[in-house]
Length: 112
Length: 115
Image (cartoon, one colour):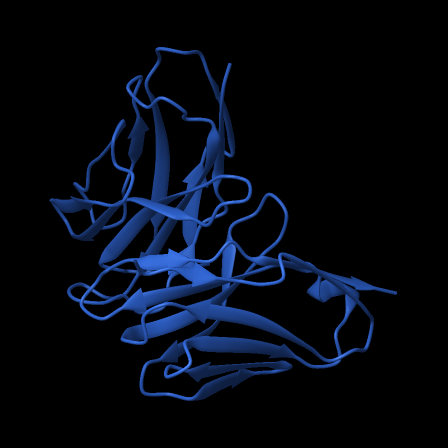
């Protein structure tokens, strides 16, 4: 069964800290992997999309890496700020499919 | 501004009633999707459409119906047959037409509560 797991479910860090969010998936034959941010009661905002052929993608203070062989992706957030507080969701599309399978997310709180 | 508009934001329904959630996009995307989000669970796919006048069932289509008469619009009807309809519903779109998805863009969601 193709599954996506995100651990931990919640994380609290002090402002300014660099942090890593984890995403693991059970089948390495992925097509792409996408990281999203969700604020309470809101929709999802796309952060980064990594295609199967790529190893990483960067946008500002965010860097996402992909290791298909180990079934893992990480989202690195540099110099965290209180405004980064949100739930971060990882989603995987497997080859030939037209749908994303989502993890349950990591709720991040960046404290002053 | 280009984007996806969902309405209404909040909706209350009595048991036994059908309700329709609206989703409109002006991104000129071919593919549109409906997801359901419940506390502590990942998003689950209800229906998706790759092109006008065509749509496919997702993982949890029972009790739901959709239509795709226009490229811009993909309304979702939650019928009385849906046993547990209280949830947060999210509409999304992507450029991709066939095969795999590209980047997904989401609306702000509609929260449905059954009284």
